[in-house]
Image (cartoon, rainbow, N blue to C red):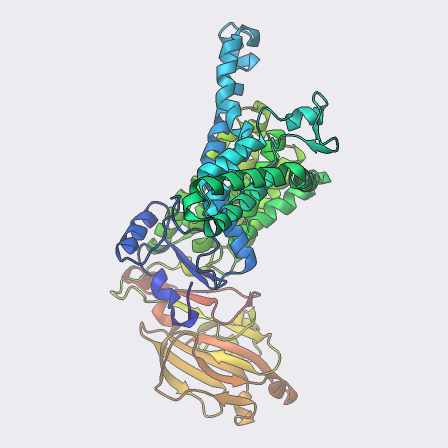
Length: 614
């Protein structure tokens, strides 16, 4: 959480060899390093004595009482869900694998290979197996209450006991009551009492109420009585509150939520699947995807199936396709190392290196590809009503969640691979950034940049279309034109760092030479020298050193147009002959500071064919 965003130099951080990318949002600055290595970095920071909390321990300060001054209520809520559900993900995933193996090895077709049928499996064997496959879901509320107590600084063992009370075999089973094979206990003749099997929201509320109540009693019960009275009152009152009204109401609300999610998933023609699949990458980007874990847990508890994770999973496969395309096309060794690291992490479900190091690092086009292809794959899967039997596994390991059903496994495999292919092709066609098409320079300066950046917002156009033969014939050099899109006065920013060797008195032209020798001319309008500075201002002087993005001056397109002149801005590489390749894209909407022109320097091997071509 940073106090002054402007003091951070993103480019210098990104040029560190081990950094995959950076991202800033809601006051939080993230440096993306990647799986495995991040643990070493964390350990190094921990040795400095500045880290006062280690996630995963019961006795640390991981609650809403931490310094959250820069976090919104939504961020704190997402952090709470993450802190509660992440510790129980491994046992949910393991149970899903147990169920998948059980289905695979007790399948009639599999047993037929060994000359057996399902009825040949002894009853006691099935009973023992059911312990592996049924325990987590039978006692899921106990796990959630435990984790909630832990998060809110309650005593976890009290949470476990309260959770076990909610699913006690002495109470009518909620599933049996719903199926009509059992009846609720009518307490005092009027209040229906049943167990809370399968109710995730009930367990969350019970954990929250219980932990807060325990903390209150710790502060107000005399020390000599605290060890006995506090657990007694906490368990009695929490259980009483949940059983006598809050539990059934919360369970009813949860059922409505689950029904709503299922309704969206089952919208016709795959519409619901597309909406969820396309929205999920954006949810991960802003950090609200943790909410989906609670919904998935409710779905699993209620139906033992999870159709939601199926749709969300296409995000990971879309990322694989995007990262693979970047690896294949890049000419930069540093960029390739970043992409390979992101690709490797994504194969096992860790998406942050891909998300922050690729998708949002390059003008968001790769993100758009991921959003659309993720929605495309999810739409197909929703049409076929594919469902997983757990959660917590993504991309390559995710196939384990479908081995319980051969049909779903086959469909999921085909669609997931198709999503990778579509994302790969779409990235190659629409989302390869110019920066990665330029090979790393051999100069000793690791931060040398052979990209020219846009000085204004606008729409790019081929230089040949400019209504001035000096520029359209490329007599001045290669480059590109930009039609301004901003209304009112337009700021002109330095397209690179370097020394200004041209600052027109009339404010209509700027020239600079970068440290690595690029000679750039920014010319505002055609024949605008005739205005003698009217509508222009300058903020720099001749021979001044400027950094990329520094303000050079302003101009008013309306003044130019009112005088019957063209306000098109030309960005020209005046020493074009020194470069083997100069690439730019016309007909693009660009913003100031985004990559505009990519240059590849002349080499000994490239000079000959360039000369031969004349």
